[in-house]
Image (cartoon, rainbow, N blue to C red):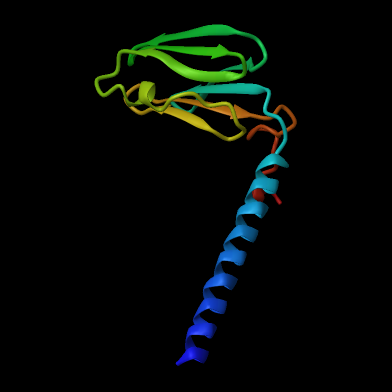
Amino acid sequence: MLKKRKKDLIFIFSILIFAVFLLLIQRVYGNAQGEADMVKITVDQKLYGTYDLNKNQTITIQNDLGINTIQIQNKDVWMEEADCPDGYCKEQGHISKNKQTIVCLPHKLVVEISDVSEKSESDSVDIIAN
């Protein structure tokens, strides 16, 4: 009975060590993604504009679907105002890391943090073209 308990403790300890190892890998990989320095805004799957993340500014988008006000300040981006019925885009909070997004479904609007060194979709080669 004592041997079984010792084996159980060794098993639990090894799982904890493995979990810590995976957490460290995630942290290192997350930091290796590079510094994001651009905000890309698309409306109805069309590029509306790209904005410098280092420049404090307010972007207001007004179209047939409604009005959205996006705030960029101190490398943080958030939806300041939106007249959509659910308001979920305002509740998504601040984003500042590469690949993070804010989505306003009723207005078909996507705000994404990205790295300037990344190729845009139009620059990449289509697999079918190969």
